[in-house]
Image 1: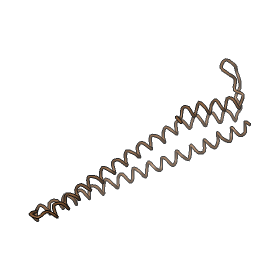
Image 2 (image 1 turned 90 degrees about the vertical axis):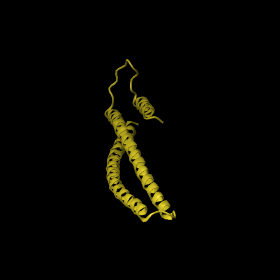
Image 3 (image 1 turned 30 degrees about the vertical axis):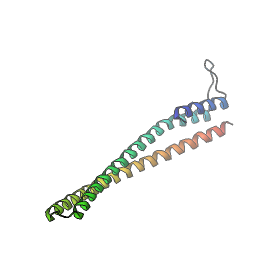
Image 4 (image 1 turned 120 degrees about the vertical axis):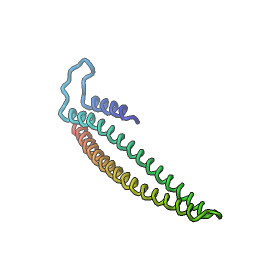
Amino acid sequence: MPKALVCVALSAFLGATCGIASPGQTHKPQPAQAEALKALNESESSLADLENIHGKTVELSEKMFGIYSALNKKVTEVARLAGQSGTSLSQLAQATKEMQEMSQSFNLQYLMLQQQMQSENQQFTTISNVLKTKHDTARNSISNIR
């Protein structure tokens, strides 16, 4: 369910259960109602942050897959050269050297991606915890209204 639809539905629910006046009427919101609506509004931006972090995590995963694929191709090429008759020792040594350089580059890139993923995970966890707290606040406020 889209987040905007959830927000509208929850706002309508809060309005119905709290006796919010229809447009044109004036009605002073109860403190619990105001607190619940505030938590709901704040959670929308946090949800957008979570979606952004998720997108970055997917992007990093795709980069890691690309690195793995490139290294796998190089390993396959070296294995093919090693299995061919007529391959000179210098060709095999050159291919092995290239594979080792690629492996070192891969290890460095992989370490950087791991650090980025860990950072994204920490941000996701922090925002998720904040969202949970806001959700609990809104839920308790709604319970207090009834």
